[in-house]
Amino acid sequence: MVSSIQKQQAEKFLTYHHNEEILVLLNSWDIASSKIIESSGFKAVATTSMGVAASLGYPDCQIISLSEMIKVTTGIVHAVQVPVTVDIEAGYGNNLREIIDSVGQIIRTGIAGINIEDSLDLSPVLIDEMEFCERIAAIRALADSMGFHLVINARTDSFYTSKSSPREKLAESIKRGNKYHEAGADCIFVQPVWDKETIATLVKEINAPINILANPSIGSAMPPSVAELQDLGVARLSLGSSLMKATLAIIKKVADELSEYGSYGLLMDTLSPMTETALAYKMATRDH
Picture 1: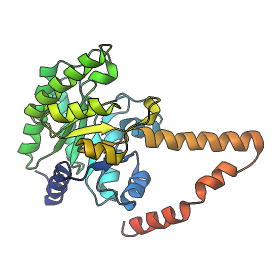
Picture 2 (picture 1 turned 135 degrees about the vertical axis):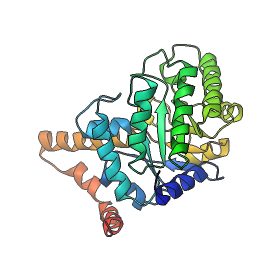
Picture 3 (picture 1 turned 180 degrees about the vertical axis):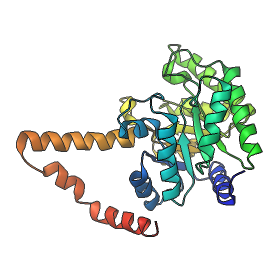
């Protein structure tokens, strides 16, 4: 069983997927980034698997151990007041029994939701859709047995890994999205999708809230704005690993400038608005 607080957080988080206003999620990787996101007024915190892994010196794609991921997640959940949803990649297991055991441990950190994907190491061959549906259904049954509604965001990588035509990728995403929803997923995550017409089709044809990724680092096109996505009927927007990548990029640029020129221009430009951010962070951490 889970606590009443965790139940309330999960219920609140689920409600956010059905409001008229789009749910916007900045993806964090540690306590500091999570608390800054919370202090900026966001309704929930979502982790990025790449960000968590990189912060501990690992590459992405489930190289980090489950125990290390759980430790980071536990710290974040205890540090913020908003619901937390965690990226569990493909589930941290080689079979259904191992995945359910892993998810049970992750649930006990106090999370409100998970993100689980149907690719392994971003392989072009996705997990069989019926096998993935079994995973979703088993996770839903596990959460039910623990007495709460875990918000399951099921990600299909049909667009991301497939070599098929755009039309075939769209059809596969729609087919998988509807099956995943029927199996117990609350939201369907399709990425990377930039075209407004494609997004509108996904919203129309998949009978579930849709999560779109805004991650400019994975393509040259600029993703639609928050307002544009809301108008298209998108329920949830996330930034994925882009915030972590931007942070690392700033570190590299500051280091290069200091190394090459001995100057602090970029560092000062970056720090100039930090007074308000630091104050907000201090206020957010005051009671913890």
